[in-house]
Image (tube, rainbow, N blue to C red; front, side):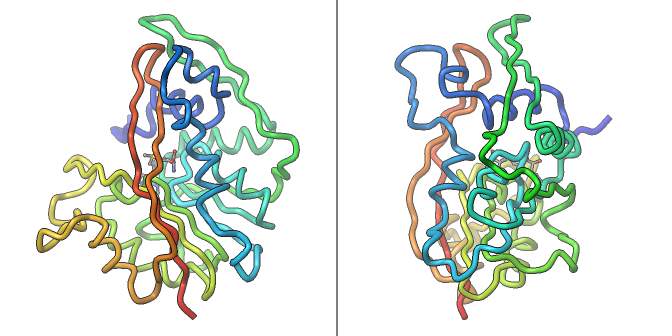
Length: 249
Ligand SMILES: C[S@@+](CC[C@H](N)C(=O)[O-])C[C@H]1O[C@@H](n2cnc3c(N)ncnc32)[C@H](O)[C@@H]1O
């Protein structure tokens, strides 16, 4: 059995609900931070400045998990590749691609769960989407280049984020855009301390900027809250650092 937490059924159900359950199915208590819901959809729809991307041919969603932002990108791009290391996540994303529907168990309390039918908006052309299992630190050389790349809440889960950051200039076409979100939740169980992008006591964003310059220049930077339901009375509330970059010509 894998000890990757992203292969566990607990995280699979949690991520299916996080990505696809309706706001009122996720946040069932009154008064919670509703603006933090629908994070993967917001990443796809607000992360890029679509009107300034020269072509909207191909997009790549790195660390796509169960694929919500990948499907949302298909509203704007002709082909979208969702890429993730977790077989369990990619298998579920493929069920959603093939059937437009998946069943998930939402945790309520103790042994009590609610069965949800999760669906993809029928306006989204699901045949524009492809899901691929793989390691974002060693993406196959023949994957090609993209008009837009998303990497949402991925880099602080990689053992060596620099391996991906060094590859990004090859993946994004000149004039194309890169959207990164990260809460910089560095944990040694995922990333050895030496690889935390905080060398020379730089803060993590400065480390990210040094890694991406000069191939990319920063277009915009803002905070993006998100909410993951653990059960009816317990949620993870996090404020990710979002940044949009353009690949220099
Ligand atoms: C914190 S989740 C974020 C998922 C999604 N982007 C979102 O914002 O909901 C991190 C994701 O990165 C994936 N991941 C972890 N290591 C990876 C790697 N080496 N290559 C590709 N994906 C990876 C995990 O399987 C998981 O789906």
